Image (cartoon, rainbow, N blue to C red; front, side, top):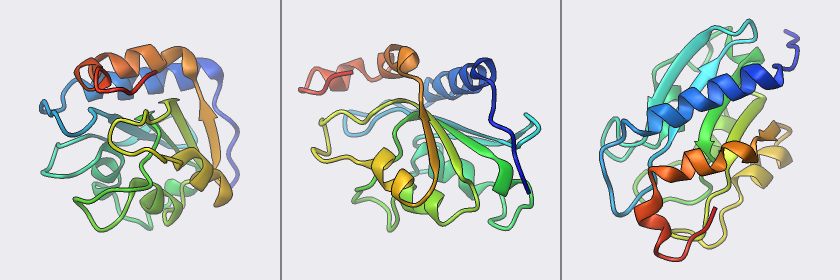
Length: 159
């Protein structure tokens, strides 16, 4: 199944929705608030999620858990996450990067690289790219993605 790259306008629109979803996260002093939307190659939403929607779930994990892993729309889909998908975590058996790599999704759009607040060597973008996944970063939306996490950034992280 071939897919055409999303337009910059569509990437902005869907990534902005992911950022808005992050505002629904229950407050936490120990984890970032993140939103995620998965969109098919025709621009239709497949799934969405946000951090702590279910206990200990990250946004990408939440969105992916709502659809079958063999859903025929996933090979051409794009996953939009307000924060770079994680490569280390202690609360769940698999990282978000692993879940994405093991899915048929081959395109990820993110706004903000994980700052060194909880993990000093986050490398989700690098892990995804090493697995052959196209990663598009939209840094002009990083401030919006970081805004609901400002209380955590005072601990030494940055945008």
